[in-house]
Length: 141
Image (tube, rainbow, N blue to C red; front, side, top):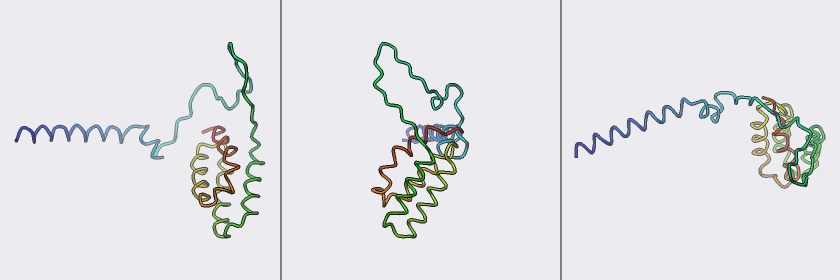
């Protein structure tokens, strides 16, 4: 019985060491928002305008997102809606913060805050979600 207990203590110590290694890893800290996400070196897909088709037919559609137009349209829809004024003010402030962060690494955080603030009124912003999520790919770090 004592040997079993000692073996379990060894396993718990190994588990504790493993958890400490994970908690001190850069990936864990990035996911928690404690360190900035590294900007990837190499090709920035957001700036490539050509297409490459090898032994295939191009069936893609090019979508160009006008940032100002997207934010103006979302803002207009929120203002015209019958949302309570306090909710409207919160959603509009989150939209403004998101617009200011467009192109920066914190855009995804502001996007999530905006979606959370507008969650109860998703039917109003739903038509704009594809255009807003397209802006996530425009972050520069």
